Amino acid sequence: MKKIIWIFVVVLAVAGAGPVTSQAQVVDPELQQLLDTLAPEETVKVLVQFSERIDLKTFQRKAGDR
Image (cartoon, rainbow, N blue to C red; front, side, top):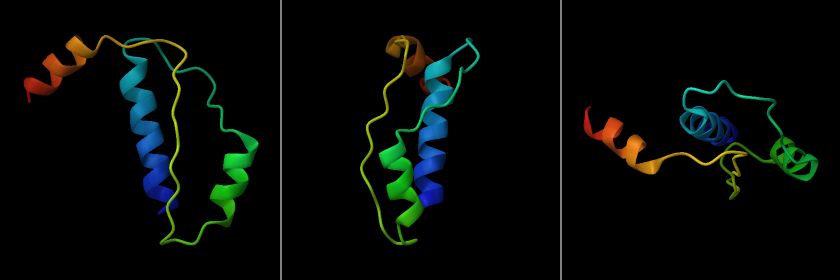
């Protein structure tokens, strides 16, 4: 399950980055400690905060093109 969480976080970071390249990845030390102790079947809710906002209309148009 840890891998799924990390994949989700990475996908969100890439989607939110748009044409701007991503800066340093920051994971709260408490979250990292929790992730390190989770069993494979356990889940944890996370809140992802981006330093910049994305234009959701552009993102939705791109998703609709698929």
